[in-house]
Amino acid sequence: MNRIAEAYVKLVLAVGQHDSDYVDAYHGPEEWMKKAKKDKKSLEEILNSAKRKLNTLREIHTSDRSELEQLRHQYLTKQLESLVARVQMLQGRKFSFDKESKALYDAVAPTYSEEHFETILKELDAMLPGSGSVQQRHESFKNQFVILKDKLDVVFKAAIEECRTRTKQHIELPANESFTIEYVTNKAWSGYNWFKGNSHSLIQMNTDLPIFIDRAVDLAAHEGYPGHHVYNALLEQNLLKKNGWMEFSVYALFSPQSLIAEGTANYGIDVVFTSEDRRSFERDVLFRLAGLDASKVEQYYMIHALFMKLAYAGNEAARGYLNGTMTKDETIQWLMDYALLSRERAAQRTKFFENYRSYVINYNLGQDLVRRYIESRGGTSDKPEKRWAEFTNLISSPRLPSGLLA
Image (cartoon, rainbow, N blue to C red; front, side, top):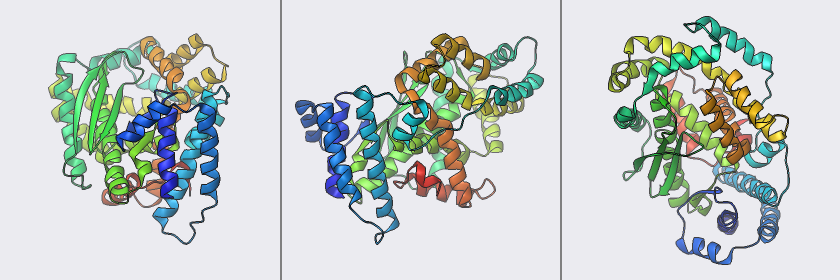
């Protein structure tokens, strides 16, 4: 499989010459990247080569090999199948939202009706203070908890240091791991981790729109500890450096790996903090640093927990928009009505759909699949050590979405 793994990396780099978002991270041989840029293979050449590698891979039997080697075989197969689908999309092939997510991410998100979200909105209606629509009252309530820009850096650094300290109590991180924080604008996302290799990440936060206090811990855990930064560092250390598996020198963004990456990053928020621990930390540290009213922590997170149940409304908006059953204006209005986003945030989210398409499922569906997988193996909230152990095993392995359902 080593030869196929090398070929896979070179194919990902080749696709990256046609799709600037495709190669999310690369820390393999520099000459491979130089050659990919110099040769710039056609999409048809890439497609034919990928199909040949897939045929060769399918002829390899791994039933007598270790579980990790079997997972590697499955990983390479799914990643190559996804690469074929992405190339076909670049050639002009159209997929429905669900068929696209299955082809690229090895998963299909459930469908929810308007009635499902309306039930949640009724609960929020009864909980939110003030008068007006649920969307207006939710926005008014949340606006009390915006982190001012001049306090953003100190709040975020405090959150990420706490997440790092807690993570290191359970995961042995590479001795040289490190990160850099940057604040950026004009992006379709709220935060991003750019893994640079050698256990180092660049973490960027988008400051286009106001950042609410809950996002400090969310982004610190998701982008940093035990999320993307730790995930990439462990794969690099355990699978690339120790095993020499070159496929882990590259990260193809539009691939099944992303569902695991985003799912574990989101679920990692609940791993690093219990609900009670998080409220205590935010009340005693982050609210104070941000200059916010700490007496409202309990109310804030009661409302926030209910709001998070609307997460799949974003999937429905993306499904309708990308399938052509919703116009752009209708998509923005749906997000305002059922995801309770402001018009500015709804427009930003719609821009995300345009750029990243069905990638949106990786956050909420990914989190749910990871949660079910870990809890089915005993990693429940009342057994934190087991939860950490199962989480660490998952982010150190090549297991992929369909493997979470086994």
